Image 1 (cartoon, rainbow, N blue to C red):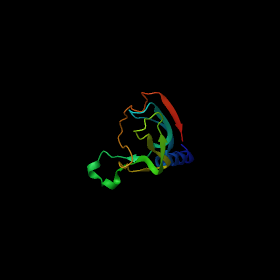
Image 2: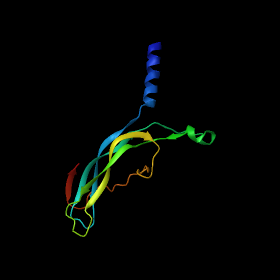
Image 3: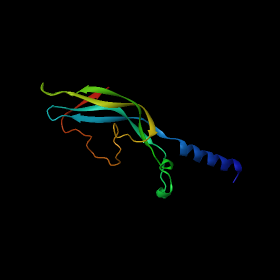
Image 4: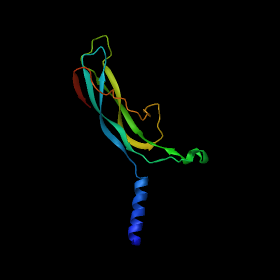
Length: 134
């Protein structure tokens, strides 16, 4: 093998190891209230993607700072509010949701992120749907 090929291969592996593919991604949230006549489909952005993680088999031999469990999480976000149509006057017809402006690889903060790996299929409507484009 030529030295140029070996150096190119090593450089490519190094860049791939340090590059994170974490960015805002389009997502649709389905929101409904028992009292309201409609389900609202809201188009928003969430943080999604790949972040480098280092996890050793010898966890007990290493310092905690040597282990890294980074997730794709919010760097900057804002909240928007949507009106759920078909609600009676005695209910609050508003729903606030996060919009990802920018993302980063970092520790998962349970104050504003769901840090669980398992997906529960609850993002669907059981009532007639209205679309909300924000």
